[in-house]
Length: 327
Image (cartoon, rainbow, N blue to C red; front, side):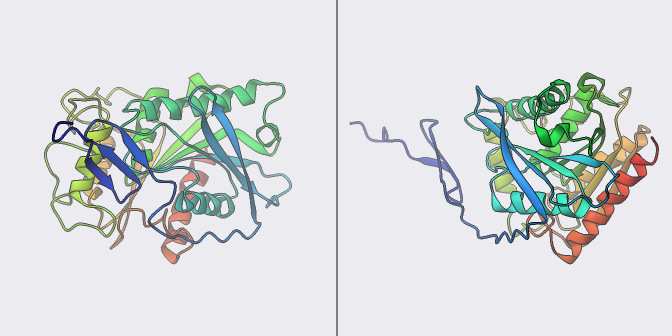
């Protein structure tokens, strides 16, 4: 055997994902962090398959007891983060976050998984997110769809997409693809998007990216995620990464549903989020930017029952209520 022919690790994401020199990957079934999930029976949940060929599942959550006998539940689509390379609806931080969203906002939460890189590079994740929304549409049109979704107390005309990190990037692309009112999903209607520190990129570093590393995130990790998730040869200015890159389609003439941007003040991704909000606002789009001072990446997802988590829920609730009052 020739020297150097044995595959060796070239990328290692805390043991969760290891990429070898021959392109093969190894994913760990155990996670290197411990997040306690205390379920109090206020929310019930179950898993459903939404794409048989790719073996993709989503998790549905709903309050165990209706907060009102007449009020309909809005639907929140929660797209998890993980740099397009790691993460799942089953991870304890994602599961805990969805429990909190469902109970705190009295909503039916849909948390789909999507194919991950480098085994499946972008746009696979974006395609899967759209497929999960098409699954919801199929349930709505079916005479024998899922009982939770055919329940008259669920409002299919009030869907909000919540994307965290890479999920926020996916949410942006869904907003652009679907357009205002999401006519292609009828009778399902997406009314707004919540982008939580979306994972956007660019070849020119921002000031926040050049700042101090975070406890769970650093520039090297961000670069690794782009290297593994973008089409081979793509840079961080690729349209999948940079909404305003040289090859990205113009958003000027597009009609978009309202957007809420939520970001921590100490996040590496903060400046890209702020720039995104400013540019959309300058174009006349409806966008609200909310920054939580001193907070780092994943501050809500990883600790949704905290005091600041309560504040985030209030902001999201205000966003939903403001839009719901208009129709």
